[in-house]
Structures are given as C-alpha cells and as structure tokens.
Length: 401
Image 1 (cartoon, rainbow, N blue to C red):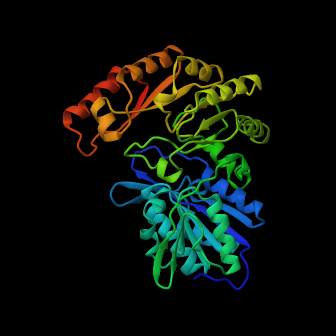
Image 2: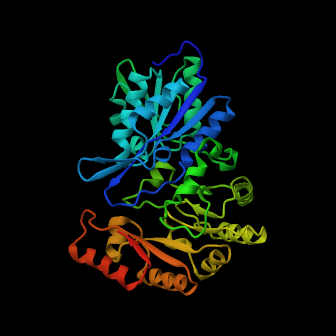
Image 3: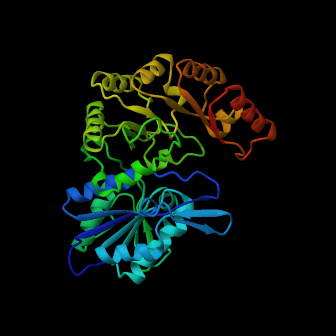
C-alpha cells in the first residue's frame, strides 16, 4: 500500500523517447492523451507538468543495439528535470511496445535516483500487459485504457490513504500480490472533458519541427484533434476496442468546432490531423462536422493519419470532406483477399467498395494512402500476394504495409 505523509500536490506526466528502426521516419506529435489527463488533474487543483522527452530532445539521436535509434533527452537531463520539479507522482505513458524499456528506465530513475514516492504507467502496452509492469518494484500502479478518470480517482485515493479495490481499470500491488481491476466503464459524455492542456506542452517545438504523425503536412502550424473514441469493430490486430471500448463515443460537433476556433486563435493553427479511429462512422455526424467547418469559415486543411474506416464512406461524404479542407485520406484496407478480411481479420468489406472509393477520392484530387497487413496467422503466400496486387492496382499515393 502506497502512503504519503501529506496529500498529493505535484504530478509530472512523462511521454518517453521515440524509438524506431534506423532510417524509419521519426514523427513528432503532441501527446494528446497525456494532455487530456493533465487537464483533468489541473481541474482537480493539482500542480501538473508534462515532460515530452522526445520533443524536448528531438535532435538527440542515440544508436541502439538491433539497428534501432532513440530520439529524446538523455537520462541525465530527465533526472535533472524530475529533481527540479520534485513531484509526488511521476506518470509515464507507453503507447508502443518499443517504448517499454524507456518507460521502465524512467520510472526506475524517478523512484531510485530522484526519490519520487509514486510511479504510475499507462498507455496501450501496460494496459495490455499490466502484470508485466507491476512485477517491477519501481512501478506502483498501472492505469488501464482510458485514463482521465482512473488517474483522478487514484490520486484522490492515495491522498486519502484509501482503498484501491473499487477504482475501475487500475492495476496495483497489495500485501505482496498483484491485483488488476478490470476496465468496465468509459467516459460516456466526452463533452465533460476539458480541452487538452496544450499549454503544458512545448507546442512551438512541434510547430517548428513540423513532422506530424501522417508524415505529410500541407500547412503549418498543424496539430492533432480528437472528436471520438472507441470502435464497434473487432479487427484481430487492433487494440482500439479494448483500450477505448467497443462502441464509439463522440464529442458534440459544436464542441469540436469550438476547439478548432480556439486552436486558430491561440496557436495560429492552419491544419488539423484527426486522430479518431472512425471519424466517419456516424455518417450524419460526420456531414454535420464538415458542413460546420465550412459554415464557420475555418479555412483549415486536414487529414486522417490513423486511417478511416471504409464502411463509413461514400461519394457524398468524400465530397463534403474535400469541401471542408481535407487534402489527404488514409484508408484501412488491410488485405486484398476477401477470405482474410472476413475470417482472419474479421473486417468484412468488399473489394468493389474499396476500389470504387479510392477511385472517387482520386477523382476529387485527394491524396490517397492505404494501410495493409500481411503475414497474419493462417494467411497463405497466395493471399499475401493478393494484397500486394491490390495495393498496386489501386494506384495509391502511398501504402503502409
């Protein structure tokens, strides 16, 4: 059981290094998830800071074993920043499995060298494997899945010296054993959330570097925005339905448009990147959003770097997207074999629909990209070849495989 002599006052949230194979594009995107958590904690009255290790040390490159390179601050610099703030809690996000070793090292450094009482981890990797993190004595808690309210409740419980057993989506240790509370609830009304605490992020670094997640940018400054969470799909390779829930929850269109106006007024943003997993899942809402961007004369370029579901698109929606500023569309196509799509990936979409939508997007002048996956368990070489053949036949501007 973790206890403090006093209540929690200062919280440092950390986004770790970016690690990638040598020669691979290292993008630099604001950690919007951490910014949302920070905003909720600020709302509760805590003194919160965010340390984006990759951004603040982006020009630093460290060659690693296995042909990898790591971008970000040195561990000496991280230790200095933690010690300078002297937080009661350090929370480290780990979205990618490649970040797990750095997440662990930052937690260990915070605990053993900086004397931080409490360490918390979250993100896709710890959420999928909470016990793996909790077996380390320098990690106290794992926040599983959507983290804003779990982190808020955890901080309150620690301050009260209370019981963690009723906190949804929390992994912790008690009496020498690991306990994982299942994630059962999600934030129903996303409009309850404050705007992400971008004021705690080094926004000018992202703007100056201008290497967004999509790898392409029509205008600068650009920044990501979230309008929905969750997905009703059950694609075998995807963590979204586990992390964010298996149904879509949306922000109101008016709130989203208001945030766009805020980004333009506060930061001079000229391009946004929608990081939703299913921006057009609700067709009527998508059209309302795109029409709203036109009606408010926002003059924003935009794209969909995380992909967009084929089943939420048609020619009319594509036209609305183009008119509202969309210049690039990334489609989650996955495979060129219908049997793989239906029986292995569990994403039944027709080849005819894929080809028709790509053709319509190209006709509108949209840059078209596609995401594909090959080598799934049970997939044959012949089925993989169908995927390569489809990618060529579609004449995409880029394909991620």
